[in-house]
Image 1 (cartoon, rainbow, N blue to C red):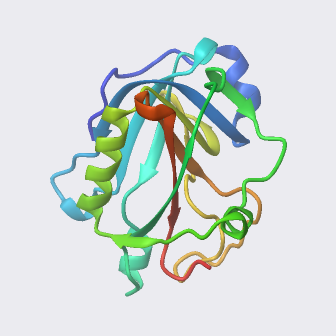
Image 2 (cartoon, rainbow, N blue to C red):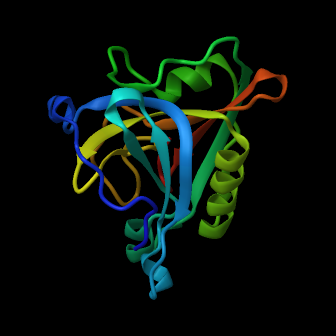
Amino acid sequence: MRREGGQHRVPDHAFALRDRYVCVAGEIASVVVEEDEDERKIDHVWVQVRAGDFGRVEISLSTTSRQSRALGFDPRVRVGTIRSTWSELPPSGVRPITGPLDYASLEAQQPVEYTPLERTAVERLLIDKARGAMFVEAWGEFYIRAHIGIHQIHSRRASHAIPRDVIGKDGAIRFYFREANASKLLLFKYDGQP
Protein backbone atom coordinates (compact mmCIF):
# COMPACT_ATOMS: atom_id res chain seq x y z
CA MET A 1 0.00 0.00 0.00
CA ARG A 2 1.15 3.52 -0.75
CA ARG A 3 0.01 6.70 0.86
CA GLU A 4 1.25 10.22 0.26
CA GLY A 5 2.70 12.03 3.20
CA GLY A 6 3.83 8.99 5.20
CA GLN A 7 3.33 8.93 8.94
CA HIS A 8 1.98 11.95 10.78
CA ARG A 9 2.22 13.04 14.36
CA VAL A 10 -1.00 12.22 16.23
CA PRO A 11 -2.13 15.25 18.25
CA ASP A 12 -2.83 14.52 21.92
CA HIS A 13 -6.44 15.71 21.74
CA ALA A 14 -7.18 13.11 19.02
CA PHE A 15 -7.08 10.20 21.48
CA ALA A 16 -10.36 11.29 23.10
CA LEU A 17 -12.13 10.64 19.78
CA ARG A 18 -10.78 7.13 19.14
CA ASP A 19 -13.55 4.82 17.82
CA ARG A 20 -16.13 7.64 18.06
CA TYR A 21 -18.57 8.68 15.37
CA VAL A 22 -17.28 11.99 14.00
CA CYS A 23 -17.40 14.51 11.18
CA VAL A 24 -14.15 15.58 9.51
CA ALA A 25 -13.92 18.71 7.36
CA GLY A 26 -11.14 20.48 5.53
CA GLU A 27 -9.36 21.35 2.31
CA ILE A 28 -8.25 18.39 0.27
CA ALA A 29 -4.50 17.70 0.53
CA SER A 30 -4.34 14.54 -1.61
CA VAL A 31 -6.28 11.63 -3.06
CA VAL A 32 -4.70 8.19 -3.55
CA VAL A 33 -5.96 4.87 -4.84
CA GLU A 34 -4.77 1.83 -2.90
CA GLU A 35 -2.07 -0.19 -4.65
CA ASP A 36 -1.29 -3.88 -4.28
CA GLU A 37 0.28 -6.54 -6.49
CA ASP A 38 -2.88 -8.62 -5.89
CA GLU A 39 -5.76 -6.65 -7.45
CA ARG A 40 -8.27 -8.60 -5.33
CA LYS A 41 -6.87 -6.82 -2.23
CA ILE A 42 -7.41 -3.31 -3.61
CA ASP A 43 -10.55 -1.85 -2.05
CA HIS A 44 -9.88 1.74 -0.92
CA VAL A 45 -9.40 5.33 -2.01
CA TRP A 46 -7.82 7.62 0.60
CA VAL A 47 -8.57 11.33 0.68
CA GLN A 48 -6.37 13.37 3.03
CA VAL A 49 -7.72 16.67 4.32
CA ARG A 50 -6.21 19.54 6.29
CA ALA A 51 -8.44 19.34 9.34
CA GLY A 52 -7.49 22.40 11.40
CA ASP A 53 -5.54 21.63 14.60
CA PHE A 54 -5.83 17.88 13.90
CA GLY A 55 -3.45 18.29 10.96
CA ARG A 56 -3.91 15.86 8.10
CA VAL A 57 -6.76 13.40 8.54
CA GLU A 58 -7.31 10.50 6.16
CA ILE A 59 -10.78 9.66 4.86
CA SER A 60 -10.77 5.95 3.98
CA LEU A 61 -13.40 5.11 1.35
CA SER A 62 -14.24 1.52 0.38
CA THR A 63 -14.51 0.86 -3.34
CA THR A 64 -15.68 -2.76 -3.28
CA SER A 65 -16.74 -5.38 -0.73
CA ARG A 66 -14.20 -8.14 -0.36
CA GLN A 67 -16.48 -9.80 2.24
CA SER A 68 -19.42 -9.92 -0.21
CA ARG A 69 -17.20 -11.36 -2.94
CA ALA A 70 -15.84 -14.05 -0.60
CA LEU A 71 -19.39 -15.12 0.29
CA GLY A 72 -20.63 -15.15 -3.32
CA PHE A 73 -22.59 -11.89 -3.18
CA ASP A 74 -22.32 -8.82 -5.43
CA PRO A 75 -19.12 -7.00 -4.37
CA ARG A 76 -20.02 -3.74 -6.10
CA VAL A 77 -20.68 -0.60 -4.11
CA ARG A 78 -24.00 1.11 -4.80
CA VAL A 79 -23.50 4.89 -4.93
CA GLY A 80 -26.19 7.52 -4.44
CA THR A 81 -25.81 11.29 -4.83
CA ILE A 82 -27.66 14.17 -3.21
CA ARG A 83 -26.97 17.51 -4.89
CA SER A 84 -27.32 20.85 -3.12
CA THR A 85 -25.72 24.28 -2.86
CA TRP A 86 -23.78 25.86 -0.03
CA SER A 87 -23.42 29.41 1.25
CA GLU A 88 -20.85 28.80 4.00
CA LEU A 89 -18.25 26.08 4.46
CA PRO A 90 -18.22 24.10 7.69
CA PRO A 91 -15.25 24.75 10.00
CA SER A 92 -12.11 22.69 9.36
CA GLY A 93 -11.43 20.05 11.98
CA VAL A 94 -12.84 16.94 13.60
CA ARG A 95 -15.94 17.05 15.76
CA PRO A 96 -18.06 14.38 17.45
CA ILE A 97 -21.49 13.87 15.93
CA THR A 98 -24.35 14.78 18.25
CA GLY A 99 -27.23 13.80 15.97
CA PRO A 100 -27.62 10.74 13.77
CA LEU A 101 -26.82 10.53 10.08
CA ASP A 102 -29.29 7.98 8.77
CA TYR A 103 -29.69 7.16 5.09
CA ALA A 104 -33.38 6.31 5.66
CA SER A 105 -34.02 9.87 6.89
CA LEU A 106 -32.17 11.38 3.93
CA GLU A 107 -34.07 9.14 1.50
CA ALA A 108 -37.39 10.15 3.12
CA GLN A 109 -36.61 13.81 2.35
CA GLN A 110 -35.81 13.16 -1.31
CA PRO A 111 -35.51 10.12 -3.55
CA VAL A 112 -31.98 8.79 -3.94
CA GLU A 113 -31.09 6.49 -6.83
CA TYR A 114 -28.27 4.05 -6.06
CA THR A 115 -26.14 2.82 -8.95
CA PRO A 116 -23.99 -0.32 -8.53
CA LEU A 117 -20.43 0.46 -9.64
CA GLU A 118 -17.37 -1.70 -10.20
CA ARG A 119 -14.30 -0.89 -8.11
CA THR A 120 -12.50 1.04 -10.85
CA ALA A 121 -15.61 3.16 -11.54
CA VAL A 122 -15.85 4.07 -7.82
CA GLU A 123 -12.13 4.96 -7.87
CA ARG A 124 -12.60 7.24 -10.89
CA LEU A 125 -15.66 8.88 -9.33
CA LEU A 126 -13.87 9.64 -6.06
CA ILE A 127 -10.71 10.90 -7.75
CA ASP A 128 -12.72 13.13 -10.07
CA LYS A 129 -14.75 14.62 -7.20
CA ALA A 130 -11.70 15.07 -4.92
CA ARG A 131 -9.65 16.77 -7.63
CA GLY A 132 -12.50 19.08 -8.60
CA ALA A 133 -13.60 20.02 -5.08
CA MET A 134 -12.25 22.83 -2.92
CA PHE A 135 -13.38 21.33 0.40
CA VAL A 136 -14.72 18.09 1.80
CA GLU A 137 -16.76 16.94 4.77
CA ALA A 138 -17.14 13.28 5.81
CA TRP A 139 -18.90 11.30 8.53
CA GLY A 140 -17.53 8.04 9.91
CA GLU A 141 -15.69 6.31 12.74
CA PHE A 142 -12.45 7.90 13.97
CA TYR A 143 -9.33 5.71 14.13
CA ILE A 144 -5.74 6.15 15.24
CA ARG A 145 -2.93 4.13 13.68
CA ALA A 146 0.37 5.47 12.34
CA HIS A 147 -1.90 8.31 11.20
CA ILE A 148 -5.41 9.48 12.10
CA GLY A 149 -8.48 9.07 9.96
CA ILE A 150 -12.06 7.97 9.60
CA HIS A 151 -13.58 4.88 8.05
CA GLN A 152 -17.00 3.15 7.94
CA ILE A 153 -18.07 5.72 5.35
CA HIS A 154 -21.10 3.85 4.08
CA SER A 155 -24.47 2.61 5.27
CA ARG A 156 -24.06 0.68 8.51
CA ARG A 157 -27.23 -1.37 8.11
CA ALA A 158 -26.91 -5.15 7.92
CA SER A 159 -25.88 -6.49 4.51
CA HIS A 160 -25.63 -9.98 3.01
CA ALA A 161 -22.00 -10.16 4.18
CA ILE A 162 -22.16 -8.25 7.51
CA PRO A 163 -25.09 -9.17 9.83
CA ARG A 164 -24.46 -6.37 12.36
CA ASP A 165 -27.15 -3.68 12.05
CA VAL A 166 -26.09 -0.18 13.14
CA ILE A 167 -28.73 2.54 12.87
CA GLY A 168 -28.08 6.28 12.96
CA LYS A 169 -24.32 6.12 12.36
CA ASP A 170 -24.15 5.92 8.58
CA GLY A 171 -21.08 7.37 6.89
CA ALA A 172 -21.01 9.71 3.90
CA ILE A 173 -18.80 12.25 2.15
CA ARG A 174 -19.76 15.67 0.81
CA PHE A 175 -17.65 17.48 -1.78
CA TYR A 176 -17.89 21.27 -2.03
CA PHE A 177 -17.23 22.99 -5.37
CA ARG A 178 -16.57 26.65 -6.20
CA GLU A 179 -18.61 26.55 -9.40
CA ALA A 180 -22.21 27.57 -8.63
CA ASN A 181 -21.52 26.83 -4.93
CA ALA A 182 -22.51 23.25 -5.67
CA SER A 183 -22.06 20.33 -3.31
CA LYS A 184 -22.49 16.60 -3.78
CA LEU A 185 -23.18 14.25 -0.89
CA LEU A 186 -22.18 10.68 -1.80
CA LEU A 187 -23.89 7.76 -0.06
CA PHE A 188 -22.58 4.19 -0.26
CA LYS A 189 -24.39 0.87 0.19
CA TYR A 190 -23.40 -2.78 -0.08
CA ASP A 191 -25.35 -5.73 -1.44
CA GLY A 192 -28.35 -6.49 0.75
CA GLN A 193 -28.52 -3.17 2.58
CA PRO A 194 -31.97 -1.50 2.56
